[in-house]
Image (cartoon, rainbow, N blue to C red):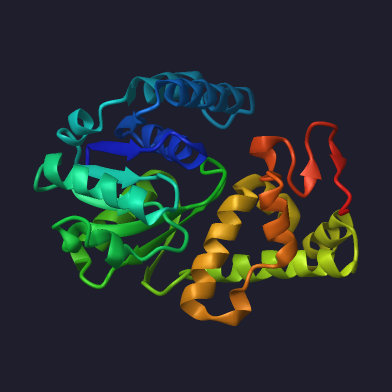
Length: 290
């Protein structure tokens, strides 16, 4: 039985996972070693509750109960000891994930399942950082977590059927639709999204159209809910570049990052989180490619 879920990392994804976990009825502990980041996450989660109440997405009583399910913690070792499921949502860097999994392996109870929220990285490799590969899996949530309906569940080489089914049930209780797939670099969604987003940067680089025109064409012509530039500004240009570099290494030339994307990242234009990406959120006007 999964009763207590520990989420590691209080960034955009971690706080979103904590929210849907609490709303789904789980006891949730959100962990971050940066207390300031943790307090910011708490404010954002409270804001999501308030907006949900105003929009009629959740009742006041449901929100109050879900808030009661949430705790915040800076001590990973302490939190790990009481976990039935640990979901790691730290940056997509091997050395960071390795440190996290080595720590939770030492302190989590033997029955605890491990999940990594990754959009591209190998759950088999990540499982090797611990000693329970049969209980380790990837849960790929989408941003914003409280709005996006899908969780892509990715089995590693040694993930058991029981683990895959247990994690699927957890995602369903969180209100999500699921697909359960086998590991291959980029899974399903990231491979397609990376190609579309990277091609959009090549189009912009070639002067084919403005970001607004390209986004509008993709949204209205292909029925995408967001344009590729709107999406990359939301998820972060640095995150997209990291994913493309990984896919380029694993799958070849078709994933080579567009030079313009690399240039934007070098300039610090990382998207909404920095105020500027493809678009300028400080003036709400489109940034023009120089």
